[in-house]
Length: 414
Ligand code: GLC
Image 1 (cartoon, rainbow, N blue to C red):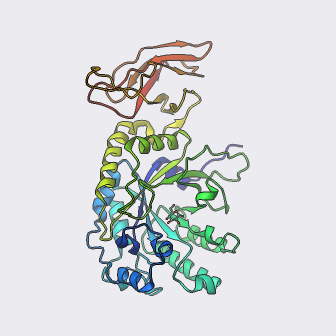
Image 2: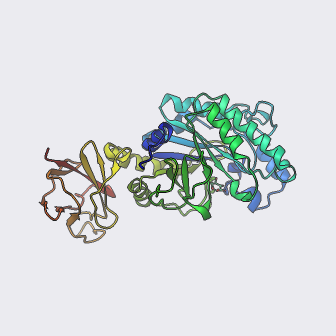
Image 3: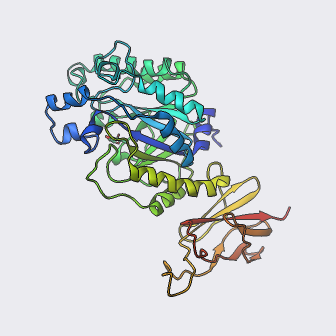
């Protein structure tokens, strides 16, 4: 039986690439979002983060535009993280929110408004565990009521939202989280919202409650979904940091390269998964320079790839190595990796001396032409329809260019 994705899941898949944003009180300490717990920060010290939280530089429009320019089509923002502080107006539910500190603005409202202007889907990350709320350990049922009411606020005051992205059930694996009630409420109030619950580093790609719409691959490489025993179509999303921390950490210098990020995005598309790439805002709400620069570079690439990147479907045509094919509107798009840079030997040290002849397997339709989409240059090819093999010549990049992963569009005879 072929499973048909529900509308919200289909739309989410179509959006393919999203921006994850971690931001909260911890951002002022600049050493990751787990600092309160992992560094045993005294309560009084953390309290000063609350007393000093102004969000003075948070410009939702600017961030949304940056994401859009990077080719991202949704943004998942931490509305509340494990430290229990809410970036939204909890409307009397809690004193530990943006309205009770110097900020005094509902940042989630600003975020949602900015997303709507640019057709970016707003998704709300929400913690399910809480390091500071006493009921979390002392009266779990009362805590779950508090959690439900918190989520109810998010589901009723911000118009149509793209989804809820929960994180923290892994902290009490055996507890009864009363998910039927929580998810039932979301379905009632926000029928088009995705429900996602991060299964964490140790249980990547695992399905859970029947209402879950997507599995997660935290810091991992997504694998193709095996839907044989599923009762509904569940999609997948992999999320990743640009260095090793989700929240900003100025002394974590180990940033990923554009090559790694772009190749990872490609890998996600190859297996039909969404890619959620994270940045951590600084204490005042600014995007930090290196993350902004990475997003700008990725944007150049996604702009080149946009024809097939978002809704290209996994093809039956196979390639060698990391290369793969997506299909859309009767055309095939080959994502070609590791091409060398061509230039004079005294100027350019090529990455590798790769073989210019690349192969496609299982290609039964007769090819009319193949060209690079970045410069329209035609590629020479030969095809054997009996064996379904195609050989094409993938020259390296001309001096002045290096797209990391280059895309060739294949047109077929009618
Ligand atoms: C982990 C961490 C958390 C982070 C999340 C993002 O579960 O606890 O800090 O928000 O991963 O995937």
